[in-house]
Image: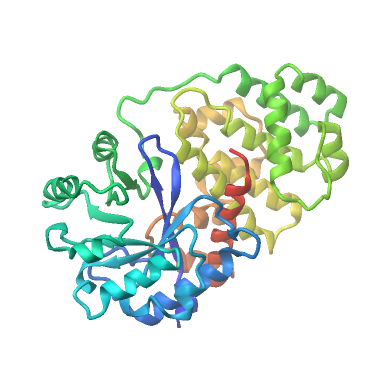
Length: 404
């Protein structure tokens, strides 16, 4: 039954808008009155553990953390304990904190190395014995009690607990979190326009990358490409660093553009230039938006990888990345496409979510929010929930490997 559910991720960001990790939940589980089936909680924990565990480092997400809901009575369950302790925060709801044995269960989880977050709990009513084991306290920023909760948290004067705001749905709310040094679950806030945001001209590095992309599209000689890339040594270094961090299993380090083309072929170069373009923003820089673009690109590529030829799947990566380029640059998509020569299929996907790539890109976008359309969109592409969920978590891990 639970295999048919779809997961959704919500980024956790700090005051600099850097992604610290994600809350991972089932679609629709954000509602306070959502059913909390223990079997569904355990299924999700087991699935996430299976996808993100790594025998060498413990987790494929590196130094990023994941928040995943649990219950005190489940903290000793094998599905929960399958999650890597490093980087895993087990979120407990306030309504479960009066259960018998909560303090002992939480203390045992902390001894194993797990973080503990209390979600929608009244700080004034929390047991001091429980608080000594807590790493995070979450409170909804749109709650009438938010200001009181912040005051109570400040009164705790704890050096080991971080306050986290949930339901941060406006830039005004985020600025409040920034001012108070509160971590924030931002949902899709980073995808919405910021007040006072102005269009930005392409900087010299981005103009150079666009020139290279056009040359690659026209199958220019590698020596010509190298000649252009040498104008900016920092870009050349960054491009090779991305390629080497992607984990192709080549057994050797790529030393030059020519070496990359020899080892990987010519067509993958376009995707790396697309990544370079998105990360070459120097003004209005938004790390969470850039991270979202990279995850979306990889996610869309993985969704289409089973059905499309390799080069077509690589085009999906470009489409996914470029679907947020207008927000990264602060200009309408139509203006972006005037500066970049893309294939008709990619352009069609970016403008109308139609054509061969459009449905994959649309599904990738829908998975970023609590959407009732994900199931129908996946079914129309003959992709089941497990494939979608695997692709989403794999994309998160891949983005973390890229040395941003």
